Length: 136
View 1 (cartoon, rainbow, N blue to C red):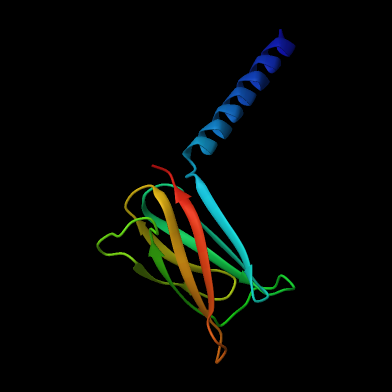
View 2 (cartoon, rainbow, N blue to C red):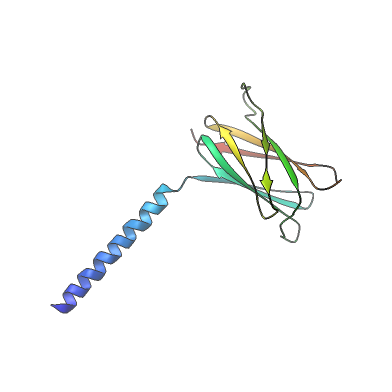
C-alpha cells in the first residue's frame, strides 16, 4: 500500500510539473530576431512578433564578440511597402554597451524596417537596415 501511495504522489507531482511547463511556453510572446554584420560590427535586434508597443533589445558586438560601449544609436521605424501618417517613426536607444533598448510602436502586422544609425565617437555613422515581419 505504501509503495502505491508513493507512486501516485510522484505521478501527481510530475503531472503538475508538466502542466506548469506547458503554461509557461504558451504565455511567452512570439519573438523575432534580426542579425547583421556591418563594418566589423555584429548587430542583433530582438522584439515581439505581434502588433503593439514592443520592447526592442539591440546588441552590438565587435569582431571578437565583445560588447561595444559608448555608442549613440538612433533609428527609424518604417513600413517600406506603405506610406503611413506618423511614419517613419524616430527611435532613440538607451543602454550601457551590453545592450541598448527602446520601444517600437507597431500598429499592425506586415513587413517592417528599422534603419539604425550607430555612432561611436567621431567615426562616421554606421547605417544598418533590419527588415522583419510582424504577425497579422
